Length: 230
Image (cartoon, rainbow, N blue to C red; front, top):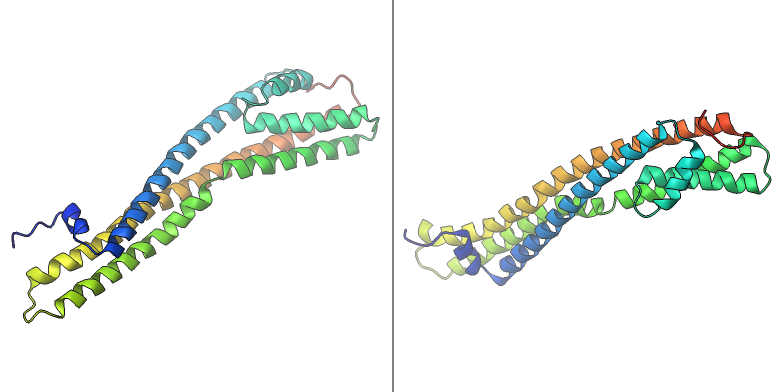
């Protein structure tokens, strides 16, 4: 009854398979938390930069002024600003190529912005698949460690003449630790994945709305020089 039943003691006395499973799950958990913190900071930065550019876009500046600033901020600007720059770049290329059809200019700018949007979303959604995998697989890895540990415990008890709860409990407890750590790794990953998916969807919807708004501005501006917002 005086046996040490702490988690550390149980793991130190567990079979090598259970120890390997627990080590793997702890490593995955650390990687998961690292990805979560990076994604939280990245999304905050994206929202801040998008809001700043949207304010500039609605401030009354001409599109050419915004385009010059966007090219200067190519490495430090937000996704919305890069999408705007890609649309304006394609728009100017078509105008310089003596394409006079306004609908062709507008379609070219929209296509460029859609391609840029897809690239931005691919970047924003990075590491989400890893969180989804951790959330779905970790409980099963922990369960494998538990099953193996219980099997190992009962195999060792088979040679005993008298089996008591005090002899059975440590082996089962050390096996169940693997399941607990599997859930410890999975639950934060699932919660973070669901939250990030919602936040990213909102960011995508906002950029989609911007593309439509900017397209309307360009539609009113085709055929006019210089290009302005009004």
